[in-house]
Length: 210
Image 1 (cartoon, rainbow, N blue to C red):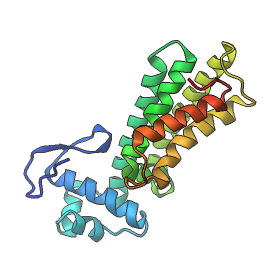
Image 2 (spheres, helix red, strand yellow; image 1 turned 180 degrees about the vertical axis):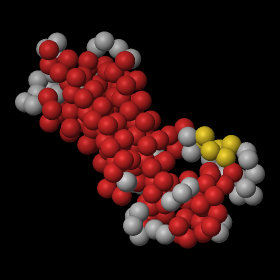
Image 3 (cartoon, rainbow, N blue to C red; image 1 turned 135 degrees about the vertical axis):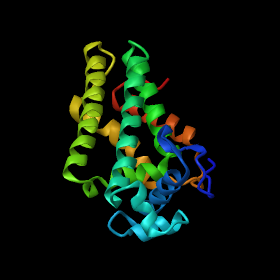
């Protein structure tokens, strides 16, 4: 991933496929690093600007506040994660195959993008009330769709679970939590984790590992 440190308007792709250019790209990456290292409340606009190689005043040319930067990171991340859930479920009518793809894609995504995913998932309470409502709406949609997938497997006789709602929550939580602890030097690749979680979730819903 190449960020133009000279501030030109060449385009770079941030995590989650967000297309940014020049100073906005530098600020985005700097904010992700700062929020992940120090937390939202422990990060100042000066911290972000310094990491981006800019003056603190330059941040306000592109964003009205530190919270607006967090909203960009969080809303983009949640939209992409929701798209992963929707894509997996829409890929097949077989609930077992759909669940396998969902877990693999979801876990691998959170491992590959673990730094930004930590910010996306663990700084929710730092968002403004309006922005938090927007993000929670996407999270509720993810939860509802995974619940519906688990229920479809139960209805088809493919899954055996005690509680559809708690099982769906556990599936999502397993994937999200990867971002909290995963590091690139952990000894496992994102694909290793994805395959391991796939087998775990199949056992969770009562399907023999395949």
